[in-house]
Length: 247
Image (cartoon, rainbow, N blue to C red; front, top):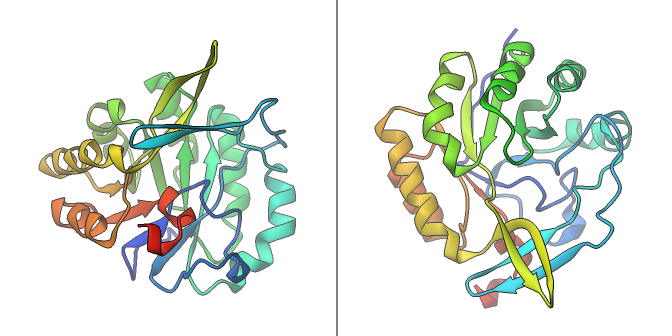
């Protein structure tokens, strides 16, 4: 039986911001969240980047981690019970660059009761054909959210929804910053991303695309603005790490 993608509350954390399972010990108030999104998970374990980096720029920062994780089976063994005990549904974020592996991971998650949906993330410059093949191979019991860069949301998003995807979310943009004489690439975060994200949500809703807003969401007003612009829900990330008095 196919599960529904439904948010009792329209706010949630973005993948990579709060770990692999809800944890009250991290000091983050999750009472306002309608779902918890895990850190990105791959089929096999991944080590951290050889030289992880956090580099500030005006209006935000670049983060380079390598997306370390223990691999899906180990993550389920460690956190699956906590997923089922959680007070909110779990959305598992999967690294979906290889459709056969993605299919294997999605099918294994169908047996976990409190997993509401899967969010699929992709490597930079992955072709539309590979992303569409992921949809073809993985559509089934669990709703699929495709996390796309801004450049693909409006062009590829409608094809994914027509093929059975439940929603599109906006992935963190990539960029590059010089550190000394070395060029460092990674994901970009910060308040400066919000205007573009808000405009993308508006454009998505104009073509009837079910969109989950993300990117630079820093305040309650930012989230409200995205919902007003047509987002079905909103993901927030780096502001979760900032003391409330600094926001």
